[in-house]
Length: 463
Image (cartoon, rainbow, N blue to C red):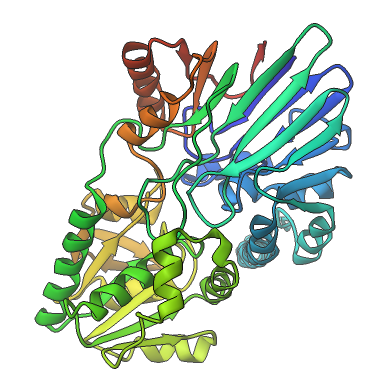
């Protein structure tokens, strides 16, 4: 059996693994590369396999760095099945179409410049029509359901506790000599996170492919993190400014809404005037409420009892562009949650343009900021940044609150990896910037006494 590491190798994004065994060709994930221009240019590179040869794509979850190249895969000949949990399929119906819209818009903007320069036009990575066509390939499965894929291959999805529908993938492959079990962590969530359940413990696996996004650091616990967040919001409102929260439309936005409601209910923040300015996040919030079976017990009980309602919490969904523009007329007291979470596109850019230069305002980062993104430049201390073609001074107070991350930290990852009753033969360390991935591989060797390795892009490994 041969495995090719196509993406998320010594970097966080672009998750994709190509597995070949006997007559079986399958992929685990097919995600976008995000971050620097150089990273994003890799989305245009030829696939290192023939898409028409791939029989199955097993998708761990809906985030675009895991799913965002599926429309291009279908466009170039894939006719197999994309297998994922039911909620992941529903989220991809929203996210892939939104991604396609961005691809079309960016190509249109670029072509205007190219036309003025006398250069030939470019084509979008994929169109809305092509993204729509790709959705016909999706097939949903339930957690803990074993799916037989033929040729001695079977798969099972377990709850990863990262976002709604996220999964750890167990994959059994019989290559004729023996059956080997591969375990792909996907993105492992934190224990005790709002809304979602804790990650499922896996006890057996011959080879494990683990994420390492926060493999070099520890998060504060959720209570301490919530208090830090509460203080940041309170101080900003007392200064007479607005709070800008760049948040991923899937997962992080819903968690922040949950926490704000809880702080309001407890009387720690009031009154609150919250704007959710992201059409995709609004749709995802609807999907979240439609899937209580994915909630942890505490969230399910609180939602059933209706404890988050109250007079001191005002939440407005702004779907139209007109309503979004109106928010920027508000000079104080607004909490604005908008996408994208790394500030590389979307309505968040307009809110930063109107508030980032104001000392009384704040920007609260509650998620990972990939190398090369606007969010990363801001948290790294840039004094000025370019937003929508204009230089904007960074005068607002910047908060980075990592404890809300949907990713487990080093301790959480080691606990999850350490739960295997029989030590895996080898652990492959993925989904981390190079220094982090290499460091976490060494940590695994020292603390768990298991062989660990961070592969290179397009490296082939035979197991």
